[in-house]
Image (cartoon, rainbow, N blue to C red):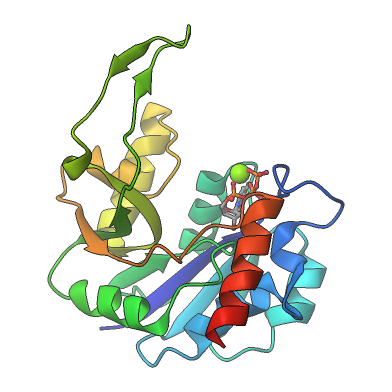
Length: 224
Ligand code: CTP
Ligand code: MG
């Protein structure tokens, strides 16, 4: 089954601060984007990689030459718009599309291969981990509204993997309805297509703040 990978890498990293977008910052000497794209370049199940970029020139220089990088397209104002731009550039009517944040360089090949294999059976999969903390639902005034049963709560990560037609339909419907979600699966959930979690690893963090960056450097130091 042909597999296309979409990497949204067009964010500006406001929560990270600093002048350079986080995907271009070196993580133990290697730019985050190079680490992330390299993971998919080396995965034997992946056929092509499409990247949504803000800075096309820098992105081309860093990863344009890596195996399987097929296209680098301009991203949009939001992550959702960036993924949609890349989805339209996905080639050859692939049957499976995996979406993975550029800002998650610590995904392991084991989880990646596992979720891609599972996509043969399931139309929509979210790599996720059970939450450790008790989660409170809170209103605008800070009042706790509910404490959902923790055993039913998972923290969504990426990759999120879909049959291509399912994802395209979900994006079209979301745009028609003016719906915006913070991940791709939330768009698919609205269409009624069943979405499943695929258990990942807590280490697959998204680099959001400087503290995440330090944690990722420490994790790499311990591992490799
Ligand atoms: N992203 C994107 N296009 C956007 C916004 C985000 O492709 N318009 C990408 C980011 O580059 C990142 C992923 O989506 O790889 C997850 O987004 P996030 O962690 O929020 O990154 P930023 O939007 O860059 O950071 P911030 O929200 O702090 O500004
Ligand atoms: Mg953002």
